[in-house]
Image (cartoon, rainbow, N blue to C red; front, side):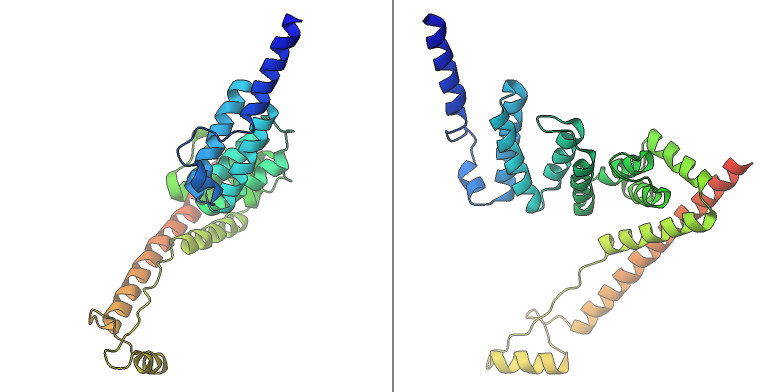
Length: 255
């Protein structure tokens, strides 16, 4: 009887843990959809699952991680990749893991491109493609450099493919980097003191609106152009460097 009573008590405690408000400071904001608060809720349940191994805790962590990921929390996307690739409280699934990893990479998570390139090169959760793997690795190299293993994988790929294929991967990587680094143009509007609507329509028709502070739109446009040209030159240099390095390494490996 004593063992039965203890079992009921512990079962009720475990059940109750899943049906009470978790002791985190911003749970009310998480319920309203605030992304950083949702990340906090996900991390809480993740930590609870690591300690208790109660499946409801894992389910709650997944629910909140996915909500936060949908709102742009790339570290949550990356954590989902880890959970599915390791099979940590879920069926191990490399394909789904890659989907979350790719989402993290597209969102700008710092190391995701390199890890994705590794997995593609090794055929983990996807059909191996040298061009796709090299593309991801070149993006990672441009952003923050490669690990030793990633560098070795890149060199092995370069030894297997032609210079034209290497250049194709570099070109696509460059285009992706260019899109990520593209400067946002300033939007300028005009509000007239006597007739705001008339000023706005006139400005749209003539495309010669002046900002409120009196700054010349032509000056802003010129500055934007200079900034864009400077960024383009920088990215062109990165592209040339990637292509040249790829060709050099290809020649070294063929000797």
